[in-house]
Amino acid sequence: MQTVYLDNNASTPVAEEALAAVRRCLETVYGNPSSLHTLGIAAERELNAARRELARLLGTAPGEVYFCSGATEANNTLISGVAGAYRKRGAHIVTTTVEHPSVLEPVQELERNGFAVTYIAPHPVRGISPQQVRDALREDTVLVSIMQVNNETGAVFPVEEIARAVKAVRSAIVVHSDGVQGFGKLPAPTGALDAYSVSAHKLHGPKGVGAFYLRDGVRCKPLLLGGRHENGLRAGTENLPGVAGFAAAATAAEEHRGAACERLQGLRNELVTAFEEIPDALVLSPPDALASTVTVAFPPIPGEVMVNALSEQGVSVSTGAACAASRGKRSHVLSALGFERRSIDSAVRFSLSRLTTEDEIRRVIELLEQTVARLRPVAERVLQ
Image (tube, rainbow, N blue to C red; front, side, top):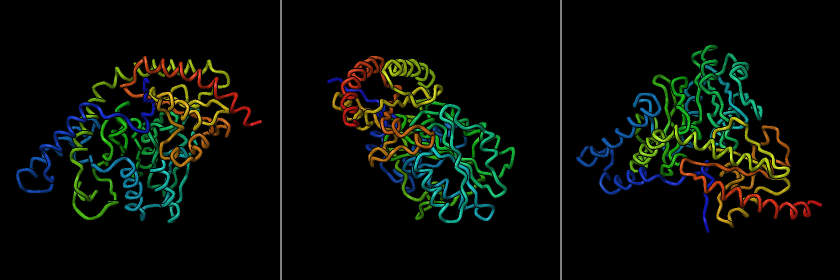
């Protein structure tokens, strides 16, 4: 049976370049980067080389790049750490209703501890405007956190323009963006931002490693204590094989980015055209979503039923964010965008990567038409 993997927003297969870098470090650069002996110094050189490469790709200085266990840790560190560092200046945060839980939950925890939060609800097509964010600012605003690309719909938010609008009101406000779904697919917006979170396993790197950019001079309290690693901002011995794999994967992603985006746009267009030909199917992603993502509803077929049916035929897709799908929770993103419950409950996300092929998309389209035709009458009978 031919297998097709279209759940790349959840995680990607590891690229050969990343695999080679991880293997090399595991076999030959196994010292602790903080040790003073020869193997420790070799490990430190490897760590510094990876930091320089990530800094180059992010368009910033190596001293502004910090490695960690992934974007969840990065988002938690930056949100909690920045808010804590500037608490005396103010206690108001601006974010959106469609952020990843690793942003929403730290913000909600801060809210429980005395911070005020303004949640902006994006329009399902128009998204968020810089003026909306500007209008949400207050005298006591210390942090704005808005994702670059939504992980469920692929909507791209204008974070650079938003950052400039915020800074025009008050330059001291810290502007952060969760760049997990954008890094490697879009230019890094760090020139306008104060902080930016990225993850390796979303761009064909290994799991368990991520990084964040923090502009020099912006204060942030560390989340993890117990050592002076990462310039005192993240305690714990660095995951050197993961870091090297991350740098290699990010380099490959940038090298292929232009051609991959153009090709993926064509593949996404094929999917959308096929979806639109299926009766009552509803594309929930905006027309200008990132080329790698499209979410569609096939009411009244439950999304989980559709995912399982396609999985049995070798096709891997999802009902939305992996962390929510595994708990059977209704998508907070689609709910916040105002879609009907019927559409939300039948939503399926197809997420592509630069390794996705034309043959795979055609295979999915063929199976999808057959699967919807088979499942829809059953779902309709159940609802009667």
